[in-house]
Image (cartoon, rainbow, N blue to C red; front, side, top):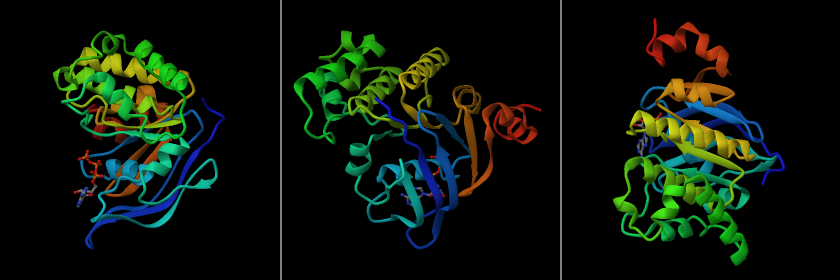
Length: 248
Ligand code: ATP
C-alpha cells in the first residue's frame, strides 16, 4: 500500500475560541511507514494535534492559526476531513465511536465512505484483510456493534479505518479502558498493521506501551514539544521515567 510519504508538521498553532491555545508551535514528523508516539498529560494537546492533521477540529471553535502540515510534500491543512482520507490518512478517534446500532458489516462499510471510485473487488479485498486481522469480527459480522466488548469495539474502529486503505493511521488512545490482555492484543495488531507498511501516529496514556511500539516519540506539554527522540532514549530518560512511566 505504501510508496513512502512522510507527514511533516511545522510550527503548528491551534486554538479553541479566543483564549485556549492548545498547540503553541509544534514541529513533528512521522517518516513513511514509521511508528511515532505522542505522549503527554491530559490537556497537553495530543488529540488536538491528531484532529488538526485529520481535519476534524470542532467546526465552530477549533482552528489552525498558523503553520504547515504536509504529507509527501503536499500541503494538507484545512477543515475538510475528506481530504486527508483521500490522501491516505485516517484517524481512529478516542472512544472508538462505532455506530452502536449498526452491524459490524455496516460499520466497516462506513469506513469506505471517503474513498472514491472503489471497485467491488477492492472492497472485498479490504474487508478480507480486516477479517484476517480480526477474526472475531468476521464471526460476528451481522451483530450490532453496540454489543461488542470495549476491546472488540476498538478492533472494529481500527478495522473501519483500514477499509479506507490508509498509508498513515492516527490512533487516539487505543488502549483506553481495556483489560491488560486486550491491550497486548491491540498492541500486537498495531505492530502487524505497521509491518504491512502502514505508518502510525499513536497517542497513548500508556507510555510504556507507546514507547514499546514506536521508533520515535514526542512528549507534549501544554501545547509544546517538551522532549523528543528515539523511543529507547526517552524510555531511559529520568524525566520520562518519573513523569510518564511511574518509575523512580
Ligand atoms: P486528553 O488526554 O485529556 O484528551 P490531550 O492531550 O488530548 O488530552 P486535548 O484534548 O488536545 O489534550 O486538549 C488540549 C487543550 O485544548 C486542553 O486545554 C483542552 O481543555 C482544550 N480543548 C480541547 N478541546 C476543546 C474544545 N472543543 N473546546 C475548547 N477547548 C478545548
